[in-house]
Length: 433
Image (cartoon, rainbow, N blue to C red; front, side):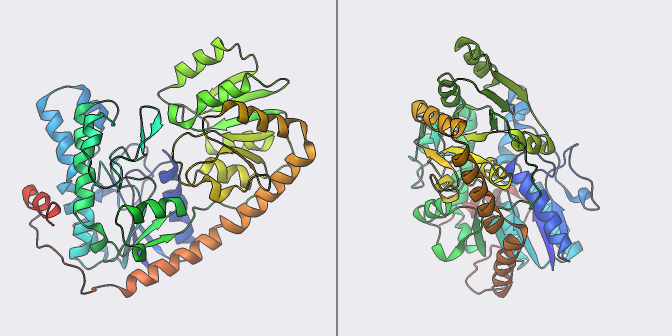
C-alpha cells in the first residue's frame, strides 16, 4: 500500500511527532511505501519528498513583529493554507497514493489539504492527538481549570476569555480555525477518525462527529528489554507547563522524606517551578532540562515510580505508556484517558487531579512498600505489551485502512469544485452549511 503520512513536523518535537516517526517505521517494516508530507523545518528527517513540504513559519516570531503584514501572513496560513493544498495536490498527482493518513495538521497545514484529497477521491484517515475539533485552545483548559464552553461549537468564549496564550489576536485566529473545522463538516471528507482513547472518542461524539466515523486505537511503543535496576527517586518527564500539574507534584514532594525527585523537560513555566522548589526548600529535587528519548528510558529504568500529575485532559500520554513498558509504577491523575490505562492498585495508582496531599500518600506507599511497587510495575509491563505493542497497533490500523479504501469514491461525499489559486473560494466553501 502507498500511504501519504501527514504531520506538521518530522522530527521528535512532541508526542504527535514521535508517533508519526514510529508509524513511518512500522508501516515501512511491514512492506508499505510511506510518503511524508508536512512543513519544512531544519530538524526534519530528510527524504526524497521534502521538496513538496510547505514553507516554514513560526507564528510566535511573526506575531512578535507586530506588523500588519505579518499578522495577515499568520492569519492566511493558520486558517486556510492554499500553499499546502496546492503542494499536496502535486504530491498526489506525482505519487498516486492509495490513502492519506493525517496526524497534527492544524495551524500550519489546515483542513485545506483534506478538501484537496477528497477532490482526488483519495481516502483520508485522521489520527487526532488533541481536541482541536471541539476546542479552539485544543485542550479544554483555561485560567487553571477545565473549560468546555466551546464544545458545543460556539467558539466566541475563546475570544472573550483570550484562551490562546492570553492573546486576543491569537484567540480570534484559534476561534476562526476551530469554527472552520466544525463548519466544514469534516465527517463528509474523512473516512475515519482515529482516537487514541475512548475519552477522546466520547468528546468527539458529543461534539457532533458521527460515531460510525470514529474508532479507538491506542498509540504504541516498541517492546524492549528492561534492566533490573531501581532507586528511591521519583521521576517527572514532561513539559514544564502549569496544566501538567507540576505545582501539585512539588507541593506533594514537600511532604515526602528520604527520597529524591528528578524532573526532566522544558517549557514556559520552568523558571517559576524552579523558584517554587527553592521556596519550598526542596533539597532533593533536580531539574534536568530536556532529555533525549534514550535518556528518558535510562531515567525510567532507575526510578522508583513515575509521576503524571496532570490537571488537564490528557489523551493517552506517552509518559504513562513508557513507564508501563519500563515495568515501573505510575502515579497519575484520574483524568482524561489516563484511567483507561491505569487500573488503580493493579498496574498503577490514581489520585484526584490537584490533590497534592493524596499524591503524597501515594508516593509514600510505593516508597515504603516494595511488594506493592513490584506488583504494580510487573502488571504495568504486562498491560503495555498486550495493549500497546506495534503488532497490535498495526493489525488494528490496517483494518481501518482497508475500511477506508472500501469507501473510495463513495457517493455520500459532496465534493466542492474549488480553484486553489483563489483563497476566498476555499474559505467560502468551508463556511457553507
